[in-house]
Length: 303
Image (cartoon, rainbow, N blue to C red; front, side):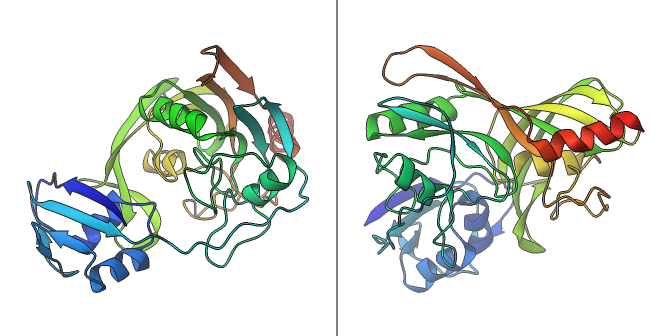
């Protein structure tokens, strides 16, 4: 059984279940609820209830039972491998592909494809997420680095956590952004009105920092480059909505009709920089914009 300890940092009291949902976005709300009901969560040394209030300085201990995971199966799914050696692989993930299996979706994912085309993957993240160091949303395209052994996985994870790896995205957003560049620095957590969405919060949540730079303006649209300083769930999509310029085609964070017949947001992980975990060499990879993205830009240029 894995144990995770958390020392609460809050400006005001908050329900335990709400706090946990914000602090542990990798776990579903139902999973956390089950942990509470099965008495696997301790609050200041005692068994906790979902409605218990937590405050500054409280200690929360999560006892996470070993999961009986369903093994992902290899599938012959086309995969663009940008680079690979004995330690890492860099993949250009297409829009519409889920990164790893999850309940109700155990096939057709990047992991299924990786197991067929590569096979040797790190085991740190378990049977359902072998090799996965970081992820991209289903409808976000672009570069992902994959670890082929546990030492590489540890090194890459540390680089991301310590902000030594750089991830650069391109996004087309609604509206004309007035500033040529800027920094969005907020707290991001689960939307209390819709737990499937993330949102900017005044208190609680986790620090999220996005640096953006305008590349081109197309009247009612702007092409921006976004560099992640942190890697929160849906970070760029939430931040661009927060400043009034949601990503074009975003089905969750934009209410505007894109008019281009898109199947998801125009957000692409275009550049990835990292230090090779085996050689120590600094490496940079780039992936061109997908065809559907460039087609939209072409239409806007004509207008």
